[in-house]
Each structure stands twice: as C-alpha cells, then as structure tokens.
Amino acid sequence: MDVSIIVQSCDRYEKYWDGFFYYMDRFWDKSIDCPKYFCTEEKDIKNNNFIQIKTGKKSFVENLTFALNKIETKYVFYLLEDFWPIQTINFDVFHNILNYMKNKDIKMFQVSPYVPYYKLNESNDSINNQKIFKFDKSSDWRFNFQSRFWEKQTFLNNIKNPKIKEEVLNSSISVEVESSKFLDENLDVYFYHYFWYPMSGVSYRGDFTNFGLELQNNMMIDLYGKNYHQ
Picture 1 (cartoon, rainbow, N blue to C red):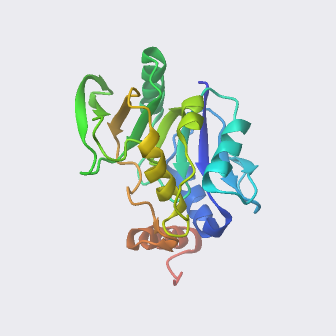
Picture 2: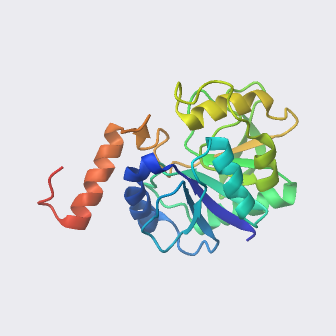
C-alpha cells in the first residue's frame, strides 16, 4: 500500500498510551495491512502491534522530523496518541482514499470529523458514496494535526518550528499555528468527514476531557470488570 501509520506522542503523555492501544485494537480494521509506528521520546511502549521510534527529547518538530525520516513509505497516515477510535475506520475507506490520492497526485487528505471553523468547498467526487471536500484557500487550519494522509516529503517540507515558546500553547497547536502561515497556497487540502474519533481528542493540555474520562472508565470496566472504581 506504500503507507505507514505514524502516531506521535511525548513521554509526559504516557497516561494516554494504554487507552490508545486498547481502542485501536478494538476498532482498527485488521485487514489494513501496513506498518504502524508509535513515536515516544525515551520511554518504552507495551504493545507488540506497533514499531516503536524513540526520538529523544527535542522539540515537537524535531521529533516529528526524526520519526518521518525513519519511515520508508511514500505516504503516512498521521495520528496523535489522544485520538482514541470510537468507530471502525474500515479497509475500503482507507484503501479508496489512498488510491484517490495516488491517482490525482494529492499531497494531503484529512479523514476526521467536521468542525464548523473549517471552510470547505464541495468537490465533484465521492468515496464510498460520500462527498469529498477541499479546504478553501482562505480557511483557518488548512495545516493541522488531525488524522490525515500526507505524502511524507510534503509533510517534511511544511512543518515549522514555532516562534513562540511552546509552554505558552500545547506544542502541537503551536506548530499548527506557525506552519499554517507557510503552507503552500498552491497545495489543495482534501477532507473526508468520518467520525471515527472524538474531534477534541481525549485530552486537553495534558488533562483528560470529560469524554476521555468516560472512555477510560469504559476501558477499565471492560478489562477489570464492573467492580472497577476510578
């Protein structure tokens, strides 16, 4: 398929790893046969379904660049560790989007829930009987770290270190803000609405969201029984 799954994390977000692996195992279509990488800084993961990449403790962009350069496929499907699946992303959707990208030489294709601050234009094409959209060139967040297929070299070419202190904002958000300023206006960013994980993720600035706590609790009950207490 010439694509790899890459999940980026940092060691201080270790508390989200077990939940990510649990829900990926539950909802990821096992027939999607491609390498899966999980990126940490120095800590080890406890999962045999992912190939671990240890980036060392550097900036968000330096860690991502290091990881992408370790991956040999032309395309990557990028995720963060707090994107816990709540619905199956099946083989047909994954495979058909990737083929659509290859056939039309598309560099970026987001597969995530829709949010109102995206300004999108409807295309003439569909995948699995659902319309494909493109980000308007004037839209905010044309560059973002939601779940997205990338041509790997395009990804590498368009990530920028933020000029603000990363402690002011969540590091991934600060990189999004900075990189959005420089994203090539000639690049089309495609979008496919697929509600397969909570758009907010399960965390906000290092803490579980209410929905994240609910998913965490459901996981613990499934693993340890109804007598489990938070």
